[in-house]
Structures are given as C-alpha cells and as structure tokens.
Length: 196
Image 1 (tube, helix red, strand yellow):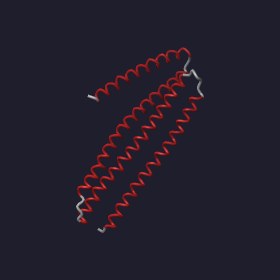
Image 2 (spheres, helix red, strand yellow):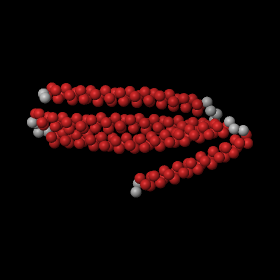
Image 3 (cartoon, helix red, strand yellow):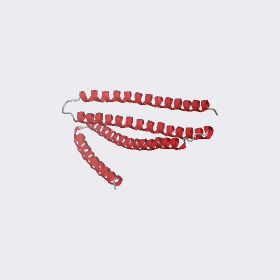
Image 4 (cartoon, one colour):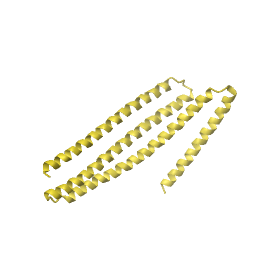
C-alpha cells in the first residue's frame, strides 16, 4: 500500500465525515426554523389574549419553555455531533499511526497514541455533555407536557355547564397544586440521590 493510497483513504473518510456533519447541521437548521415558526405562533396567541387573562401567563410560560427546550435540543445535537466526529477522528488517528508504523517504519507511535487518546477524551466529555443536555431537554419536555394538560383541562372545563364548571375549576386548582408539590418533592429526592 503506497502513501498515496493511504492519503486517498484518509481523504475519503474525511469527506464522508464532512458529508455526515453537513447533513446533520442541515437537519438542525430545518428543525430550528420549524421551532421558530412555532414560537412565533405562540407569541401571536399571547398577544391576542386580554391583559388579565390567565391564559396569557400560561402561554408566556409555554413560550419560555419552548425556547429553553429549543436551546437544550440544539446543545444536545451539537454535543452529540462533536462526540461522533471526535470519536471517528480518534479512531482515524490510531489507524493512521498503526499504518504509518507498519508500512513506513516511522517511530511515531507515542504521538499518534497521545493524539488519539486526547480525541477520545474529548469524545467522552462530549457524550457526558450530551447526556446532561438530554436530561435537561427531557425535563423541559415534561413541563411542556404538563402545561399542555393544564390548558386542555381548562378549555374543557370552560365548555361545561355553570354548576359543574365551578367544581371542575376547584378540582383543577387542587390537582395542579398537588402535582407541583409532588414534582418538587420528586426533584429534591432525585437531586439528593445524585449528590451524596
């Protein structure tokens, strides 16, 4: 195997990784545009509500949660891409070092080993960041889901007869407060379990 074949193979691998990264960034860009459209729709809905309306507060909360969710999603995607690219780069460095030592009798093992190891450490850190971003994204998603349930419940309660409506509102308020209390207790318990 000649040096030109090795270089050609490495360039082909680099091209494939570049194409993969470009494809992922295009998907992220399209997703960001969709989220921006959705956020703009939520803002328009907020502006159409009256000043003293509880829905305005809820829609405001949904808008903020959507933005936080979007940020977490972008961070998660980027850290995953960085992890994959650095993983592939580390493996390529290891293989290139092996091939150069095997075919050209150059003594560069220590350099390629250190370089590949640094790339793999970056991979590990990127996957750690990815897991944290995913955890935060799931938390925002859970809160968005809960808020959506509140909105749906309130809208259904509005369609009920007047005597039933009062009881339904009481029940919704009690359960919303109970859910928030249960959620806080669960969050505190998880935080104390994660931080001994």
